[in-house]
Length: 101
Image 1 (cartoon, one colour):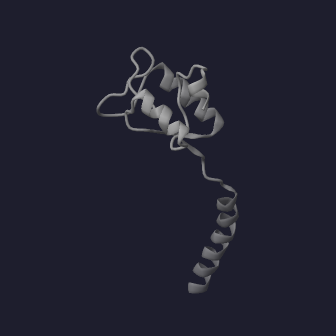
Image 2: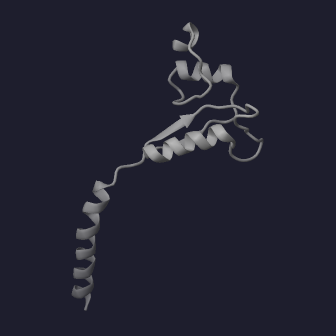
């Protein structure tokens, strides 16, 4: 009886391990954002919401990427974090010399 269970467990592992090895972890990006009325809101409690958040979430879903939100961070600080490579994503970026850095 014990050998039968052992055999079943070995068969289960031999089927599951290759499938688990093929699964790659979903990439995750940090989105540095603040409260920006009419585009996205970042409440004191809870997750940000609004049209910008919906748009970025849809892009992330289609690309197979998870989005992690930064704490509510002022825009200028987000720019600094991007420059330092400490965050991955921002919105509302217009082209100018400072922001291109």
